[in-house]
Length: 292
Image (cartoon, rainbow, N blue to C red; front, side, top):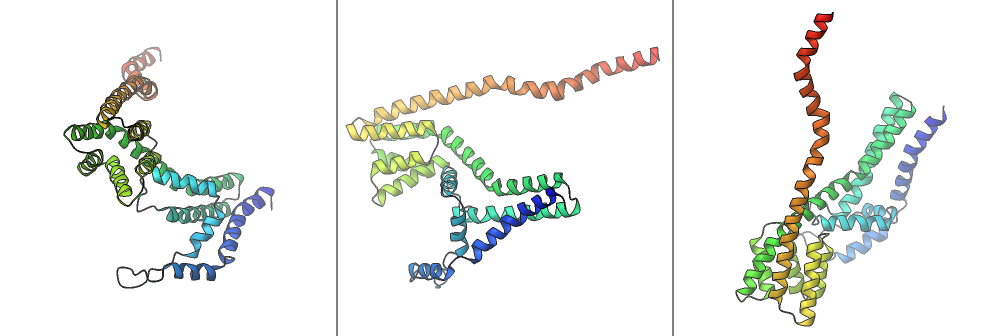
């Protein structure tokens, strides 16, 4: 066998063997006993005790780097922590998809044992492993864009409520109840944190940490400073709402200025050649017939 064949076999069999070894070498008895003690007395919806977390989750957490888990957790926080994709589920899905990609790569290599098949198998394995990351990142980007777009209107609603005589938290509650987007969800979650006894500044700072929008972070800093130094909250809301509206208009103008540049390459590649064919095609045919 050639060196490329041995390399492909090592790339596929090595990770599979390591994953199988980590799964079967884990002390599952102790983990199950600890989790059964922790969940003792917790009853589910049908009157039965909740099943403990599978030991495979602990195994996957051990083999996955801690920094990478923290990065995934941050992306999930930016994405609003969707119920369909919790962190443990993502950590299990990723190696499963990688195993599927490795199996596909092995099938392709057995049918066509070439270096191109090896590279294609490695590419498919890496793509399937990082596919959940791409989906979570896309969801996080869309969610943060929605928060950035909703912030000026939400601040205006809070300003109107405060000037009408309501307190700041009551104004936040009203804006969260009337809103339907991700920003309203973040406001409601922040108020729930305050209601369960979390300090206000810490709850506000957590809301800023769960978002990558600079305007929201600036608003949280302004609210914390106003609470610390006794500044009128209506003044802070008025200033922040005005700045948010100005920045939203500037972002819209920036996108409008970028539009001609973005449409230039599709015009050159797709539109102009078709126009030239339609306009110059008959003339070219006549010239060929004349001189032919």
